[in-house]
Amino acid sequence: QLSPTIKFSVNVSGAKGKTFKAKFNLSPTLYEAEDLPTTASGAVQADFTDSQSSNGAGNKLDANGVNDYVEYSLDVPSSGTYKIKLGVKKLDSRGKFKLYLPQANLYVGAEQDQYSSSIEHAELDFGNYTFNSAGTKVFRFIVTGKHANSTGYTLANDYIRLTAQ
Image (cartoon, rainbow, N blue to C red; front, side, top):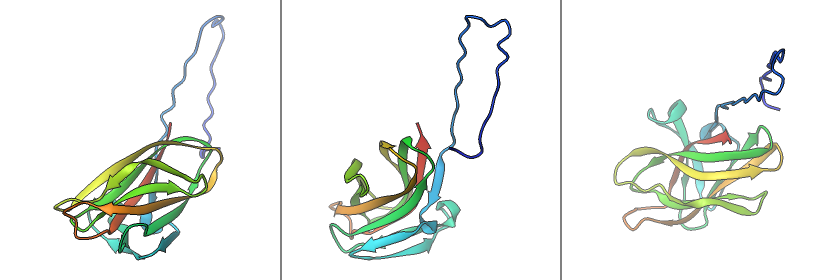
């Protein structure tokens, strides 16, 4: 159940045979990477401050190569389909990566690239995924390579945005 609970009523007096439609636009849930429980493998991860990042900070994985990863544990509020997006800080030392959900043994979306020749804040889209239950879910970002011009494999994550569909 989402919080706060929304209740509404419709006066159906004289409405016999009429159809009613309701549309609800749910706000996305933003999870700040620097505030989430984090685990890293193969590399060191640490929070960083950055005035251009949401909430003024992010989380960086100083990856050394392919298969290093950082994972975040976050609470999915209810079962259902969500659009998954990741806010990142791109730079010339960044790597390519994929999103893996270990609890589902599944990669979600396409390979993404955090490389840019200059600093760029961007939001990357992994598409939709359906969670069968609410609760703590692990989002693992696994380094898969690097752009030909990149000087490294680092990942700099700002936030994870989940929007119910």
